[in-house]
Image 1 (cartoon, rainbow, N blue to C red):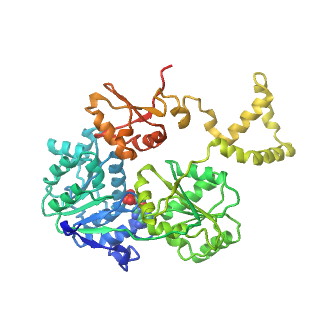
Image 2: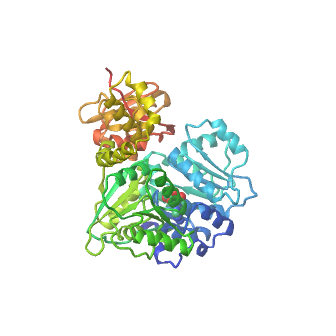
Length: 542
Ligand code: AMP
């Protein structure tokens, strides 16, 4: 770092505790409240004051830390709402990220009516051109598509005051460096530049040296140690509610605190659990003191065994005998991870911590692991069969009650209709399946998205899984592009990727069986060279 003379700022040393302390204007504070944010995350505490003071910033942070709002809030605050030119340009590596960032900045800028547009490959360019013509103030784009607009003259950057390079190391890995430089050169030099990156390889530092003015580095590392009595697991899934329910269904006698990032998140999860038959109480900053007391009393006295809370609301709570801490949303920094999980495993008791991550949050998890110097074990979610196993006794006792109540006769004509073609025991078992699984019970083997099955018969060599991708030669995508993107996104070595066959409109690629779910998880709906990708297990030829 010394060679670039980057000054280091430590957000944890600052006295900032609330968004109000950051001198954010009232309109934006209202928007943040609507978004359910209770307090700034560490990267926001560090970056926002510097950004508002007009400094160039290098933020060392990845998805999950709140980095988008760290640059989004100062941008929205400093924009001139009446000026319809593009005033802020954000470059992001993937379509998915462009959309996420655009949504987040759109929400922050809602009360100021800021006009935000994501532009990425795979979406018809004409639609983007129409929107750009309508006057957009913040553009978030992938480098490839931005260059396309620049060549066509459909985007003008001469009024840009803020330039953001988001996930710069990923853009570098994806081979966008030249495109990025070409674009930066078209942005007025009299601008504020912010660069966010999880790692700081040399080419990123050299970009910062070339195109930034005395940038300040904001990083959020700290040495922490965790209590060894806590067994720490993580689960990677796109459907966190389903994953959580599977864990609840297969765990006996628990007293659990579940952490969500926002107040909204708490409310939504309490409802989602309630609709699935789990009773949980929510705790966040919007509750009155008497509501809080009521919730805490119920939890302390074991009337409910699940408490869903934000970090702020749970601060200072002292509750004994918590068996499980669940990070429903990945914590924004390692310190908060340690605080959260430290609520279990107290006084010599053992405890379990469970962290849910989406594929994109893998890096944030790895950072936590590195900082706390403890391995967080990858957990495998219980299957339908595991859940059913645990539920068998409960089902039997419920069925006995229904049979004893003897008032199910309205349903007998249905049984009689089915009886002509099926055995009574089959009808009863099918009815139980339907009761337990709902519409999922109607899926045919072909429509079933049960990965392990689908992955076992793809026509790949032993130990590998063959995947179908909907891009091929006609998209001007090369074998190297495919290898590079998969290896970066799924964090697997390029050498582990097996045979690739390319056709005109699609390709097949073989990946190691143990990485297949992850590859599909991170690649499906992602982009390769700007092309939106559908990826699924191939079907073996019969
Ligand atoms: P990011 O790291 O920007 O991808 O943000 C991860 C998630 O955290 C997004 O869903 C944000 O909306 C959310 N988030 C960002 N800042 C805060 C905050 N201060 N409090 C709660 N949630 C936040």
